[in-house]
Length: 342
Image (cartoon, rainbow, N blue to C red):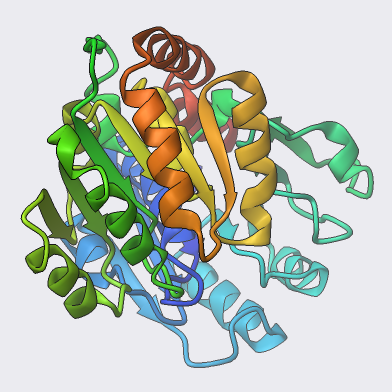
């Protein structure tokens, strides 16, 4: 069994950081087995985080998702003696998969919506609640499907909270706001303004922004101009701890939703991109989160109404928490690692 796995994922202000972060969860599990992980990236706002994890980074300077990308990435894998390449991102096409397979590497393709058309990967991982076999009818006979929330990739910092039990207060006071690693449209600012309109409720708010966020000064200014108890946090490595502190969250519709579900934290989802719509919808139907829909100019007032109702509705928050813990149990990295090993 080859002991090195290559991870190909990017992070940027436009793309966000979710692809790299869920690959990091799998890389951590791989390293814990005494094996090596190498990240190949065409630009990552998370290089410092990966370095702290003891992960080697190999940059490439070609167009992400291109044939040159596939060739260079495969060459790095072959030179490192890797057995597997893990690819995560919407810009990796059918041609990319074929090129990787021609190099002799095994391929694990992390996918969300079955939009690649045809699949040549050895394993397809779709950790979403809406994942089903019909998304991957055009696949090779050897392709194995890992579908559903039992495969959610959670980093070590979350798995350490597996036996923790959340207490649901009668009135929610602690609010966590996290819209991912970049937030290119600065929706976070609108959410802060909406929460500040609830000043009379004496909420404590922690706003987490990622390393790719370019609006830090505008967010800080908004917080300075209000006497509310709002704290801005950047480049955090303790998201699980922050989620344990919070009584409810406001997030985007990306991978963070599964982390919030695992931590049993009631969540209001703001849709920031088309690929988040389905996640927000199914979680709303499941009763784990409230789907606020696409962020619009009146987002602040809509948010205020929903949050004000939810902070006083202990029964609903309790049910949301229960459904989340039931949905995401923390088995994902173990199951995916075993699939690679087998």
